Amino acid sequence: MLRPARIAALLLLLAAPTSAQPRNVVVFVADDHGAEAFGAYGNPVVKTPNLDRIAAEGVRFTHAFATTASCSASRSVILTGVHNHRNGQYGHQHEYHHFSAFENVRTLPAMLAEAGYRTARGGKFHVAPDSAFRFEQVIALPQLETFIRSDSRKPFFFYYGTNEPHRPFRHDVEDRVDPKDVIVPPWLPDIPEVREEFALYYASVRSVDKAFGKVVDTLKRTGTYDDTLIVYLSDNGAPFPGSKTNVYEPGIRLPLVVRKPGARRRAAVSAAMVSWVDLAPSILEFAGVKVPEPPAAAEPVRPGRFRDEPPAIQGRSFLKVLDEEPATGWDEVYASHTFHEITMYYPMRVVRTRTHKLIWNIAHPLPFPFASDLQESKTWQGIVARGLKTIGSRSTRAYLQRPAFELYDLTKDPLESTNLAGDTRYAPILAELKAKLKAFQARTGDPWILKWNYE
Image (cartoon, rainbow, N blue to C red; front, side):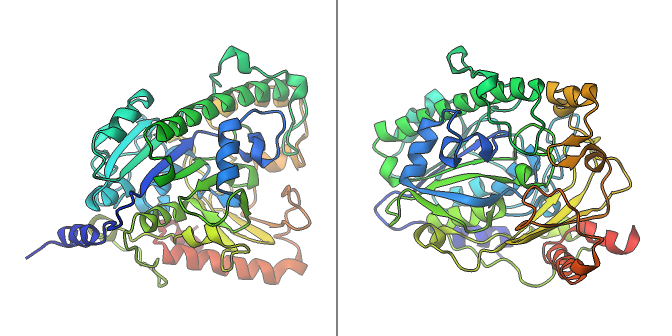
């Protein structure tokens, strides 16, 4: 008798691309790159010519969201289409943090390999275990051309992650920016420490753009550019207070640019609300692999289930969105953050609609924890030394000690500075979004759903 895993593999092989035209895939993931530091997203100071060219040839999403503002957890969602509370990668993969996805999770490289793809990765990876997130080759960027040319009979999947613009903001000297030219975002104070670090951040973004340009040049040199789906995104927002490790807009609303071969629209802008949980099913559809619809019913949390039953893909393909505007039915996203570093337990669950956002801070009696790089940053130390009472439009006190629920009217308050959870006029919206959160947790098998009753 064939085991379920073997049956699934055979089905994927049967669904492999049959077209003579190769359907290659490149996914390029930056580390800590927010939309505020991207030319095509409106920043005239930071230089991103290679990324801007892809945006001019593809679709730039204005409402694309990470499901969590933390590196490993976010990348696990990109590579599985499953929220991190269900795939098991609750936080950082580093040895001393020791988070790892479940061994039985189905991953994008494994599914594409079963469908006849050659797979390779390079750069920053930061997920585990290797047995689940299995790529056939691990290569450096200069080896990409050799990999592409090694077997033209099969399509390829190349996944590349940069370490930039993560601190310490590595960059080339010629790309340095004058701090006075920096555009300080409204969610940070305009102080010299912020300007100094943002100047380095801009320069580090330029190094990302250069690496991306090398990938594109290699595709063109090998004649595969016009046969390749190219996806550029970031794992989470910029490494500054109010962004990275936060589920406020700067932390999870991120750049996403997609260039699809044969697309009807170029230089297009999409306002569809998509999330990183939707990436894997979109890529699988492009590759010709049948992806079941995400489960509509609740996935019960019970002993043995996570160990014995691989999670189903929880996102949905946005491939059709690339050719339509306005896109209908893409007006709601969810976020699920639990850990960053092992000492940073602060689970948050989020529902975000076109007009409102609800954040449930499950461990709200605890002070909000700091990532080590943010705690030690000149930005935060400058805020502390100056005794600033506000961080952008939010009070420092509210940033450090958060309530159980944060409700924001994004049409009136895009900077999320006024919490409406205690406003009786918003009680119906609060109740509606709480119900949506509970349904999302039940549907996606979130163990933290128990906190509604046992907190």
